[in-house]
Length: 303
Image (cartoon, rainbow, N blue to C red):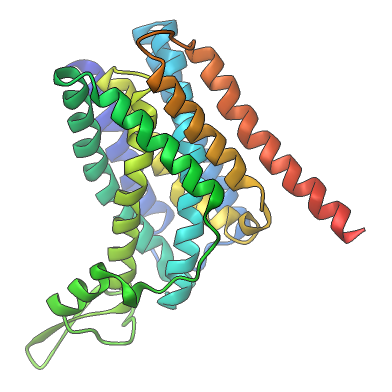
């Protein structure tokens, strides 16, 4: 394993250790101040690693990392809406939500590796997959733009029925445990179901985000590290923005634009390569404009 990968693994392991055994050694409700500080910590860590990529791999890879990081960070905002619904439906106590998200992110690190390296191999051996990925992103952009918000009914999903068949469910959280044993029989708690749906939702989001980031870079190190550092900060971002994110009612327009743009970028890749700097500018601008528009419209409506 080359030095860059060893540095990445070491940084992630140390960061996760601090997160689980130092920052959140005892389950507690995370305040807005703590969430903002933790969000700042993860963002700074991600940006510092971007500086490391720039220093060790050059300008182009450094810009690709930053673009991929911003792209994944933007798309992950959609995950937060889903987390809000999941925690509300399963009534997960606030002091245990970080635990669910921690193990959810831990699983995402593994699943994203599978998706990313499989995607890279597919493009390497079957170049026409670029066009398939591009079409997937454009369809996702249209769907995000046109689909109305629906209520969350996990009990109607196949995943829920499978989980219920695998384990009988006890309708309490039992001090934040995923499983409990009574009379020699193993029961899952709503905490487990919440984690199950968090993992399932990340797999679904990976169908959009992985092809999108593969349009930015084909360097496995850049693609995977930018993806993971964006995901690592998702938990604290949830606690910092869960209360206000639903107010940004134009955000889905920005996310739709990003997916559509990246899809077009992939379809045009053999004919015209859009500079990565342009991608970085457009992704950042799309999120900025959609957030500002939401704030302005909200202020105007309340005047």
